[in-house]
Image (cartoon, rainbow, N blue to C red; front, side, top):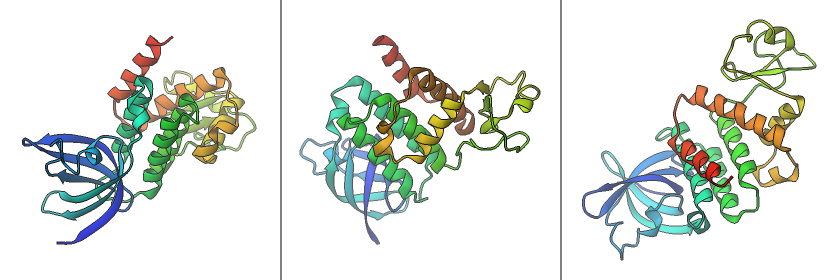
Length: 255
């Protein structure tokens, strides 16, 4: 029975029996895993806090036939503030759902783990505006997953041009004027994109998430990035995110 130690963030859980949980954990060393937290639903369980969604803990576990089994957990960060505000909670729920969608069981990705940990931290503290954090996290997650947008060369003709008036979400990047006037004429996945939006994409991709609030992005550019990014994620991950729909509903209700 091999004992392993790793840091991890709870993405989701399901109840098992009368007192146990099956946790889906994004770990720093072992990728995404499923682990049984025995007795974690009991009020006096030592695993009670560590088995909640979003919580960042250090785990001691061993691998069984079908699941890991947690023998010890030390909570390092609960991100408690996320539970005090419905909007932040909604963002956090979407963030962990995205991480769950792009991660595979047993495939380590320390970059994804650290991105999620930092994003939940800044979402919890409020040091970075939630909308800006939302854009930066999604872009960086897609890059880690192998879907970095091409912003420097036409994805249709591969030409290096001075100006790219559209972004093709299916092809995954900008397209030049000539290609935008032909192949993208009736393409529902081709969106108008300004030079300012291209620069915003580059900034969000290339800047450490702790520093994305060092540059102001005006509302027009922000909305362009958001619209393109939504289509880009929908097409390449081929998944409907209910948490995003709920988040949109929360934001609409606050207008």
